[in-house]
Length: 301
Image (cartoon, rainbow, N blue to C red; front, side, top):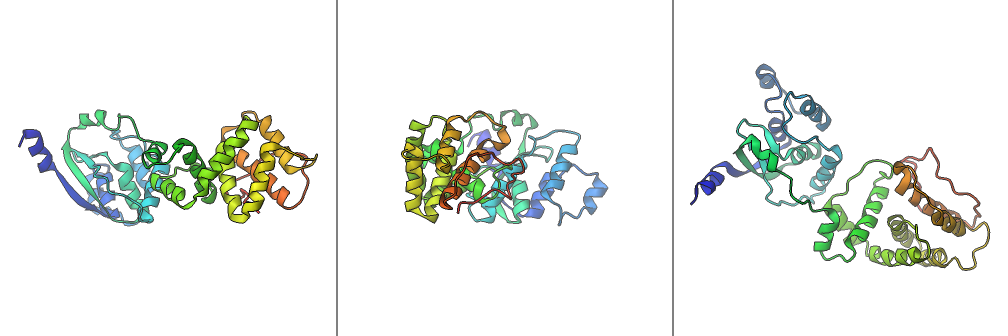
């Protein structure tokens, strides 16, 4: 066995990581010895640990993305976390050099996970960590066999944000969440076909928002959904005051709007037109409310 393999075998082993153990790994060296000895981590939150990491005198890792932590934690909580063999890496001084998001997710989820832990990596080795080409969710869905993976993933992400009431907040969907909704919502691929037809007639029509609305409308009334989307596609016979006509005109003249409202605003317009049409009401103007929040974002009627 080579020296490198000997070293790997000597310093790598699976470890059961509880929330308490994750806290101990993350805050190692951040407290004076006396404080560390008396430290009681039972109720320490992820946010508190992140503040401690940010306030440390030496930067040993990337800035923590809380949204990424929450994404991983949801998978752990929902028993969707998959063991991939990727190790937690601890340097020769005892500091976590790779794996802080996974450890924080263990704490946030309150679960216990098993990871390979590699110890005694050199501090300089962090320069070579996570510098390869990342695999995005759409790429993972392509490898899973989904045609037009970027487009169906965009629709899936829109549905997940909408259902989680995070339309105007930051939100990262995990690979497992996207894979699950694509398996459950078989209409997503049909939605993609319907939105492509619309985009041939309305150049700026928002595909992800239309696709999400198509799926949700199908749960309410598939026949009404097909009629709504056909009228939206062709515009045939639409009279002045028709919510669908107003929506068509709005999408045709759509200009760039504030990024915070861009996708949420596009979906709001579709939902608003659908609800008015279902209620048999007319519509003359369509303006996204400035007071719109994730909590007040409308559902389809």
